[in-house]
Image 1 (tube, rainbow, N blue to C red):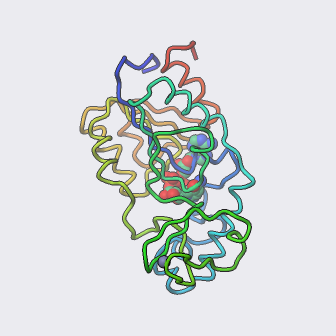
Image 2 (cartoon, helix red, strand yellow):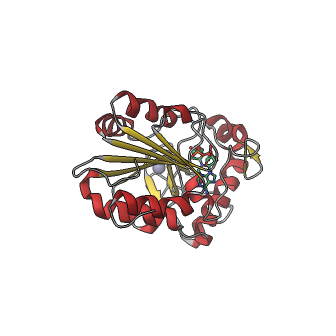
Length: 243
Ligand code: NAD
Ligand code: ZN
């Protein structure tokens, strides 16, 4: 559909690690199933946290410190332009735990897999943004609300339930256009949103470096780097200029 969106079209975007790749944050499935040289089972499950909290904490502290060194790329910025055009008809759902969408300026944004800047208390449920220097060392951070000595990353690990699923399912079922960007289609339930959108009659667009697992479900697939493709596509969608 290389043409402008219809007036009033409700657009839902799902992004994955691929949209942040050009900012210098590594994806994890693409090459070898490792994430920054770790097996997912060793760093991104509740069992790993129980078995070896030091390893998991150290891993996420590394990811959290990295946020200070990266900046949004043209793909994040293009989605901000799209939101300015669509207003309330735009919803961005990200699987990413980095903060590059919000730093670029996206507003109507759901982090379904949590956020690196935040920590959570397993005892009292307190969620805090903790990005000061003293929160970014390899020492644990204590809960100031209940005194528990070890907050955990506010991240949805494998085997845990993603956040805001009811709102997400509803928005995807109700949208007219669904666009998945930089996501491998391996990680459920996020990967299942494309099937919901398709079943509910949305026009489904994919943008990815490699064809993802569920590529056959897209009505339209654009292969390449998000930072190179998306600025032009957004211009077409909002009717600014030709590709
Ligand atoms: P993934 O790592 O499984 O897949 C990334 C996909 O992006 C791949 O299909 C790859 O071909 C594609 N890709 C790579 N570079 C690209 C580019 N420049 N433009 C477009 N596409 C590109 O990622 P996923 O599907 O998001 O699932 C991984 C899970 O890991 C998520 O739950 C996420 O929370 C977590 N994760 C997050 C980050 C982050 O926050 N930046 C980074 C790694 C992993
Ligand atoms: Zn607490």
